[in-house]
Length: 239
Image 1 (cartoon, one colour):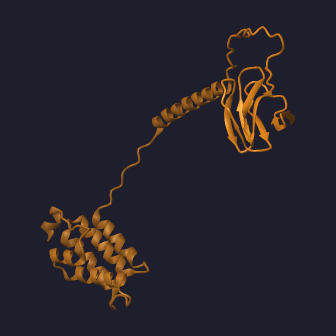
Image 2 (cartoon, one colour):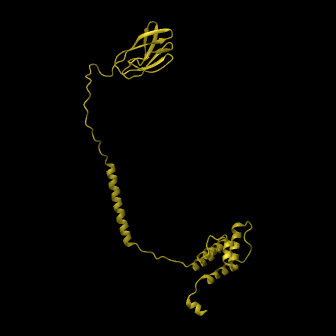
Image 3 (cartoon, helix red, strand yellow):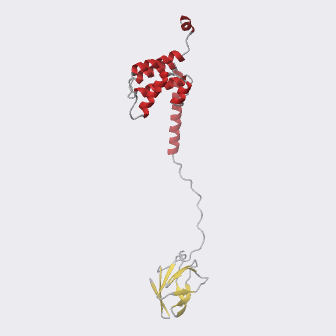
């Protein structure tokens, strides 16, 4: 801090040695009003605290009023950031230097290219020796027989048998999205009605399905195959 005394006026400013462009804070003992000047920029003033700034390397003369005292030419020294007797000539421009190119991206690209080539070669070789697996098509009737046998081992036997029956009937043109009542309206069959009814009871009723001989009903379900499967000509002649 540097104390400035002028006409019984006391003020301090900092930084102690301000340079061009520095915000210079000046503190007065009493509220102050600084007169504007072309020599400096009045950044802010509040009460006895004032902040100014200048870009001219020469002392600043402040004028204003603090308390009941008007003051003039309160000098704040400002020095240049340039060394003494500087020729003020700009430094020569150096040509731009290209940064060294990193080698890691080139290495990674090379590795990726080799891996891609290896993948293509492997795929080509595999395509030459790839064996075509025969597509095994299981007839709906055979799938139905297997499903009926597996339903006997299910925890919900009646529900499993009902699902197997629905799937088989869907293969025979009765949509899988049909409800039990809709399906029975299109297919009037007591066996199907009993299977689907018991399956619905086991799925949705808290009391479970009505008692019945599951094995007997499962055998009756397989009789649907004779009803819906097309018969070979030899079988029809034998019949």
